[in-house]
Image 1 (cartoon, rainbow, N blue to C red):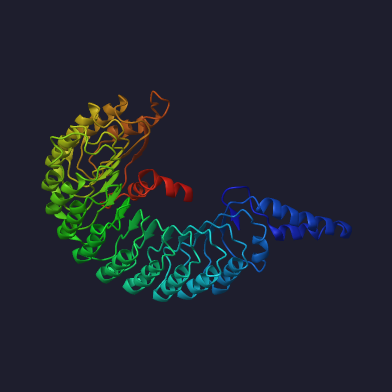
Image 2: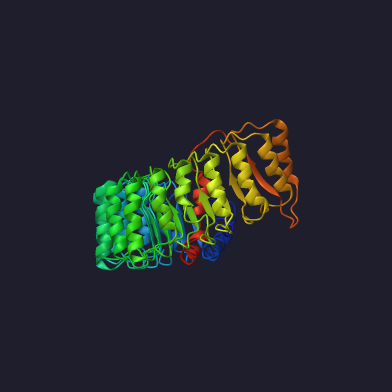
Length: 495
């Protein structure tokens, strides 16, 4: 066992080895001292990482009176899971808020043991349950649904089930537990990579319609192989007002096409729903240029939007024109937008011109991160973008992705000049690999790492010359789902 926050853990085997070498008359005193030190030191722990179990695990957790967050790593054997469950049933984790079991390769039998232990009600304060990247199937989903339906976890707010083998039946079981009104505090559901397909989406949306989770603010349905037909069920839930408090919606890597976006947009516009949506992730959804008309109309209502991801959708220049058609002559339509992702869309120089026309009317005054990877910008496209940077239309821009755009020295030298003039926010990050740059220009970029900004921070914090890669940057998506862009009040308590 290893602590994540306060000091190091107490090694009982080392203490016993010391006792073997002392005088017999002093052993009793030192054993009493060892127990008191366990209670003092372990009692101060708020977060622990459990790497392995031992026979005296229940006795060890007796001293962890202040434990709030437990992260379990590599506990896969049934005997080890049973030892952890005995700790829960003994009531030693009654103050627990977070139980993190990611990447433990739990099977249905292990989940049944865990849920039986949780049904004891000894973890009634548990708010975050992470079971992602395991092998939870329908049987495990049934056990979890039973636990939720009995009200054993009345404070649960964050349920992470991504990358499991739930399928439509498993999601139906978990969604059915919401009908018992014992999980009304749930704020976050993550069913990404759970093989839902269209039947699973229908089951999930039917459960939400029957028992609205009025506090639900975070819904991730990434990579579930559903199509536009499934979006009809989601649109129905939106039109009923079930998801009006939603702040994060991720349906990426599902081939919903323009029909799916059209259905969703109509349901939002018809009743003025999702007004508080802050993060919309639609990358790799096979949208194409036609869908951008619907997205553009939709975005006129989403004034609170902070993150917009449309990468890998082949929208091209016409798609950018449709997307920003209503904003080229209006101002301040994106007052809060921080991240804009247009990765791998081949928008070209013409698409950049439409983008610049929108930015030039102060529509993105707070933009911090812009991804234009694999868009065939060339020098003219980048120079158009640098025009709005030079004249202060993007004062907060700090992270710029320009990889694989056939850039040459001329445009990159203009970018270097703007960095030297501090026209870009300090501690900037520049991703500029897979371009035809000379060694002299690369050396100029590296020299900026040592150039201080007027405020003391470096002008350029990172310059990354990565290999050719057309996928959405992982760090972009990670930052997109950070609390500062969505659930500030709720998630900051958890993290």
